[in-house]
Image (cartoon, rainbow, N blue to C red; front, side, top):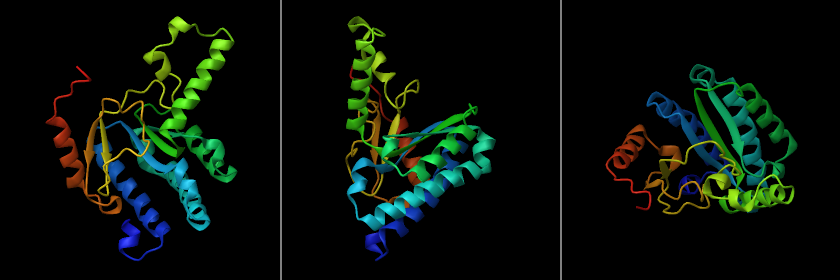
Length: 218
């Protein structure tokens, strides 16, 4: 949307989006937010034009290289993890993801999840398949299968569910993002396009979140 409004190629907008992500992460880390999940590329994005997908793959690869070289990752000791159906990505992209994950594997100051080739529905289906496999092997009984158990089979296993989900660009839907994990998350929708997202927009989202009463279904 941002690129279209300015008569830019879509990938030019994505490049600006990556630069904005690096800026927003600094704001979040300075505010003490230590677990962040960003939606970089959905499985549905593979249906875009061949040129756009190719440019996005190059951008994702470059993004993981830049993360690995970013001194702030070492400063804040941020563990980086890619979540999604990574087998659908080109091997050169997967290679850079593996290098970055390995480089940050021992860091324990925070977590940055990067959702690539991700679909919330596919994540749930994959978790069901893994549970069925373990059940068939006798590793888990029917009585042991509950919400907590199920959560351990998700990409975000052993991490808390998100407190706040921010969606920019005027869209008021999750688009398959963390469908299980966001059941009781607070949602904040912002009209600002992502490349133009400002620190004040982030602070407004956090302030709105702080003013809400979380009921968790009760």
